[in-house]
Amino acid sequence: MDVVINNAWVLTLKNNRLGIIKEGAVGIEGDTITYVGSSKDLNYKQADILIDGTKHVVMPGMVNSHIHTSMQLLRGGAQDLPEIEWMNKGIGPLAKHLTKDDIILGSKLGVLEGIRTGTTTFSEYTKNVEELVEKVYLNYGARVVATETINEVAQKDRSKLKPTDLYELDVAKGDLALRRNEDIFTKFKKSDLVSCLYGPQALDMVSIDTLSEIKRRAIENNSRIHMHVAQGERERIQIEGRFGKGSSTVKILKEKDLLGDYLIAVHCHDTNETERELMVNENVKMIGCPSSISMIDGIIPPIFHYAQLGGDVGIGTDQAPGPGNHNLFREMRTISLLTKTMMKDPTVFPAWEMLQLVTSQGAKVLGLENKIGTLEVGKKADIITFNLNQLLLTPVVSQPFHNFIPNIVYSATGTEIDNVIINGDLIFHNGSFVKVDEQKLIDEANARGEDIYNNAKEDWISADSKMVKDVKKGLL
Image (cartoon, rainbow, N blue to C red):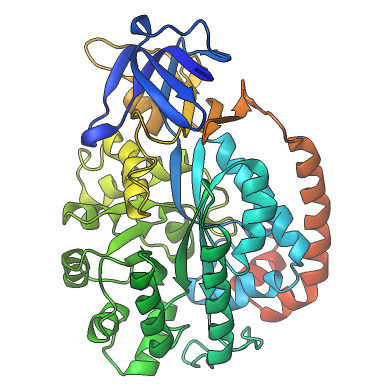
């Protein structure tokens, strides 16, 4: 075998169970898992790379089901704002000062951050996603589900728009984005690491005709639509302005025959229980971003209710200017604790369900369940090792139960990850990147960040957001 990890606690996550194997081993040949079982039943001495898994957990690499890495250099730039201000007054005045090189640099920062904390699959959602796939994801050996943002909102300054002012749509802009989306299907058709989805941004940002055409193509190409759905007050105001009072995103999607098993609906925190039941009945998949939506909207995304209804749910980190980083350990803990609080029930969303959300469930939502998400012979070797011999995780016991299961979710920070294997390649080994100069990237990002914020200063102050007022008060 090329790589063997032995003498570890192995979590297979298969068949909706943890699948704990004591003193277990995982063997890899090429890009594929060829052995999962007891260490004593495996002849590992001839392996090219042998990783000692003593006092470690080995589990499937985690799946970040929804991520925008393009704005990573704006981390900390739009926090503690009213939701209605976040896009136009908060992030907008900063984002327009990002160059193409800034987007690539920021994406590198975000992807390395994810890999370091155990993410092996990223569902990247951005404009010109092809460039990030080639210059970032494939360069770093990461698995990516590429989604090209399709947005028809006309290119105009929106910082002065009132919430009730409707965005002007430019269909030609949408057509161009759809062509870019089609191009990535063709370009990466033979790639082991890249799969593709269609990415209309939201119902208030794309015309019904364009959405209907995207649906046709998604079904024709056996793909899915990855779309922000019912994101909050801003979207609701736009939808009522376009379709009439009392309209909602889900109502319009149903009316226009745009709900089905081809749709992956992101966020959904402005849906009601009846709408979520309808979506589950239509086999719509959902992705929630707990930290981002808590930060930007002050709302707990309805991940628990959707799962309770029997819907397929994954979780993501969204973008850095919202929650701050791309760490799925934080997301597991956040949604578990918020849901327990919301339901006034400490038994809901237990640790083992959180582990499934970031592995097998995430893979299923993205249509990758036959390739990744569990440790099984024949699946792709996307694997992480987790060092239990850490202060925050001590003591480690296995009788009468395995205390490291809740500790992974509620105590770990992600820094305990010491090996990351993607598609059979050892990307992160013994706590360091194999081929990447991490410090050089950090230094470059810090220098560029200073320039971006300096260049954006006038526009940011002019937008006069709550954050600007807080700065004037000496609070930031």
